[in-house]
Length: 198
Image (cartoon, rainbow, N blue to C red; front, side):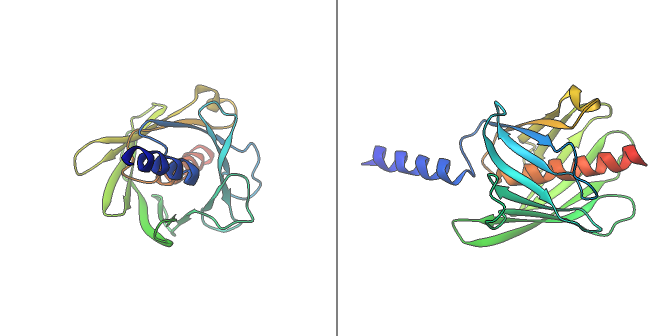
């Protein structure tokens, strides 16, 4: 009986695509061209063969990202990131659709001032997470500020320095939906592009 319930629960989690286990990896590729819009991305399985999510930008003055499950943009988005007007440091709001409760949960993402390296603070579902990278490092870590646990981390591939950006994301905890980390990467990516282009 309990074994059957456990198997059914695992099938539901896999089918919904939100939390597949405690050590998930994704390959996230930025589109080569996105025109006047902000960066757009495709989220693949760790082999880069199966498309799991699509991050689309809207034409807007400020950064505006919508995440869709798979490549089907006709369905409703499952996560949103909207930048706020800020002259120096990145600030934005996030919203992630919870399929179980059938409602959106809101949060924020803000860049913190740091002379060397980079740091963002993400607040979502009563959890505060820092997204930190050291200067000249291609690695960034998501750290739960309540207990200093590493929830996820991503590595920007060296080939990104010469070609389109590619990120390897490793999720180590089910505390937050994976879309939180996808949106963090999108915010970090647009911020890095602003710095590089002046």
